[in-house]
Length: 282
Ligand SMILES: [Cu+2]
Image (cartoon, rainbow, N blue to C red; front, side, top):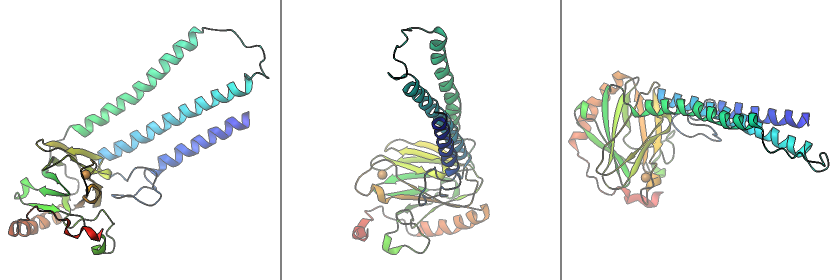
């Protein structure tokens, strides 16, 4: 019995430790990785908070699982018919009844407080440094930079046969969203046709793109790099083929890109027609 309890304790602790570590050590940054079991790496303060909350919950649920397993083991071993032929007829125990009401309430409170704090962080955009407007289409995204000259462009997935080395399959796009590092970026999200969802796991952002409505979210990327996401609301035939790619660069590189982008995207306004002429490529 002691050995059993000890092995359950060991297994649960190991599971909690490995899954907790998985959120940072094993998970990809900006994209999924092989054998990943945790969340993607955190590139914004919001995602860092999501990581901590996730780890906190994991500790709580591991402790509960351990506790219930131990109780169950005690019941099975000590109170089976052979070990305990004459069962007690006890029906009430005030102390235990108060405890099993109060303790779960305390646990729920301990979860609710950081949970609401996290929701508040996600939902209240701090004073933004710039805005990007994101529009979902069947089946691609378009982006507009109202604070940087108002240019806009479409962003389409690169077909598998056209991928360059290092570009991830089903995630790489022709025109990435470029944003400066350590700047608060407000995203306005809407849709031109059906409901899509703008989601970048490493930023901790997921918000629906709804036709006729303007949703708002924000992120402040603290690490340079490319962060991928996917449409996260089933939107039709090519739902799986409208990835999001956000490249976080230094302010200097961002300014240089804005200069080029203004020219590039104003010269040839891209007609938003069905881009899936090469659907056979996938
Ligand atoms: Cu979709």
